Image (cartoon, rainbow, N blue to C red; front, top):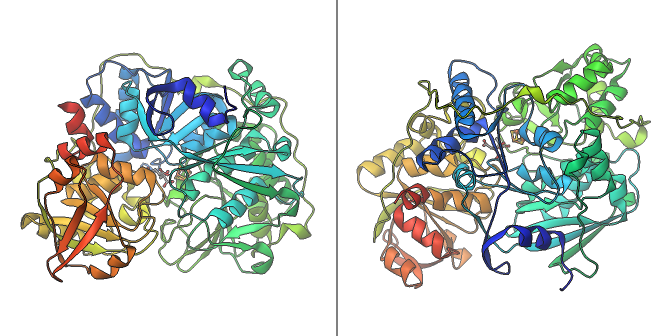
Length: 637
Ligand code: MIC
Ligand code: SF4
């Protein structure tokens, strides 16, 4: 047998259908959902008529919408709890922590497959799990036992050597990788880490890096499972979950990147993209109004311990606010037990719930024009809830020193406290509710039935309802923050599509729909970056969007479009982007026939009287799903 990399090993062990070199379907062992995507996932699961989930383990977390301002969040939580109980799913209540942190601590296993309805699901790659983010419908299907379909990913090997300087962290490494690879052009790739420097990276540090693979746009990232993994699992009381996992000598890769950790200097992502990387040295001294430490990227025990050691006996700058959200109840309990929490409180920090919170703009929005320094993974414009805030991303070490000084600090100039890893993590699994398999699902008034979509028409007659530029994120398409509570009410949530970009979009889209004109979105490169939220496809579909024509589309969003019957198409010649204006009348003739016959597809810009060639990357199953008007219609028939 020829030498295999880690992906080949796990994929081979889970292959159900197809060819690993091309398109294939794998068995999903574990799933996770969170509340903001979970309600839809379970509403969709209900339509699949299964009595229980077919996975080895499925967990439903509540971590995004925990503000409970109004009845909507609590309605969602109750629905999720009762659906989990009926279908055999473990339920993690609000307050237990952020799904990725908790899953890493308690459930993720090396060598297993995990599908999650959240783009940062690959966090579990830090423990050697093959973890992928997807839309809720794909997760629902995996829970029902269907294969998860994937095109063979190209593998980038990232070889790490050298030793980190004390002030450099895993966050700086992943920011370096974001500088090299950027957030664009990595669709279809997956990252495998290796190298002698791995021995300096703990599981939570590795998880910081696999977490932010989502920002690169890669399908997933993975670390080998080694003695460090075993130690982490042992301290979590889960040594039995350990297996060794490494690539064979001579295994092949599509691309190789080598990084000498000893050469890294502290980095920061500047507004408004995680790949807008600069050296802290060039930005130090800049006043910061707000510092936030937390999110699924940097909220582990070791992250917060180093922060507490830095803040110990000191006070944060009077002009700066510091908010800290421990990633899980486990982390919160441990820092509370050992006194570190008390140091954080005494320094003047505000302690937030163990939840996503500020990371998704659910509370703690900074003041107008604020400079906010965060340990999060995303700094898209407006995501903090303040449109004109400037959000920077850096390590917890940089964040803690900056909170003390009220300005960005280069930690190179500081003594970095050494933090000892715990002998044992605090474990209390009674915080998870086990399923009772009872049929008593409760749907409060915030839970509305799913909309239905028609089959694809032979000729699409429509209008370029909006033309947007490059790197439009799902936060632009479907804002979160205070709008999050409408995730289970598609009609209501659809009223906010493209709100941050164009407040008149919804009105125009509804008018076109009434006039029987299909709404067509024209976009630049990397359309649909960021979150896995299927609402960014479902709500536009509800408003009559039938096609997205872009220079390129990100992986999860592309699949979500297909799932809800929207055709993802690309401009054959990228220059044709300039040949379509907003409001142009567009016709896409014989689309069904051309897709079925594998003929070229094209559009006629009726306003400009020109023909523009299009491309697509749909496989046979994608085409069948699209023709049916989406995956629910397809599986329902
Ligand atoms: C995010 O970080 O954007 C989210 C909120 O976690 C999303 C999921 C969602 O929109 O519910 C993600 O990353 O997939
Ligand atoms: Fe939650 Fe932020 Fe992580 Fe998304 S990126 S799962 S909002 S903490």
